[in-house]
Picture: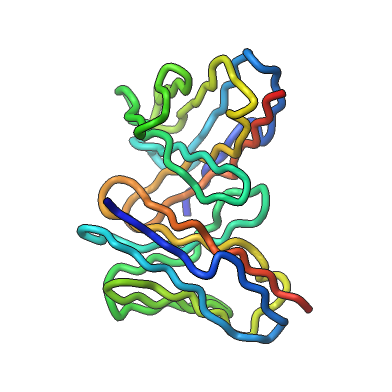
Length: 113
Length: 108
C-alpha cells in the first residue's frame, strides 16, 4: 500500500504561536487528502478535505482561518494551526487513498502550553 | 446523516478467549466498510475493506464479516499483542465516518 508520512511526529508550542504540520504521500499521487483530529480516548474526527490546487473544504465547526490547509502538489499537504491554544492540543492525522483503501499517516501529536 | 456505532467501548479478554467486536452503521449508499487497528500514539493501521453484505475477510486471528446493518470483527484465540483500539469506518461518499472504536485488552 501507499506510504504517507507526517512531520513532525510531535511538537510542543506556546499558546499564541503557529505550527505547521506536513503530510507527504511518498508513492501515491494524492489529489485529495483528509485531515483528522483525535482527542484522547476519542475516535477520529474529520476536520477538512484538502484538494490539490484548490481550496480545502472544512467540516462544520472547524475554523478555516485557524486551521490553514495548503495542498500545492500531489505529494504534499500542510496544515497550519494558527494562534494555537491549549484546546488545540490533539493528535492530527492525515490520510489519502481511494475507495479501496485509505492510507494513514503516523500522526502528529501537538501540545500547546 | 451517516452514523457508525461500535460496541463494546472496551473489552477485556484473557489470552485465548475468542470474542467479537460490533460495528453498526446507518448510511445512504455504502461504498465500503473499513476496519483499522490503532495502537496508542500511532495512526490507524489498515486491516480490511468489505463492500457487500455476506462478504468475509480473514487475516491471521481476525475475521471481518458484513451484513446490511453491521459488521463484526471476530478475534480467535487472541494474544496480548492484539491489544489495541479497533476502529471501523464507512465510506458513503468522499469521506470516512468513523465509529468510536473498541479498546481491546488481552491479558496473558
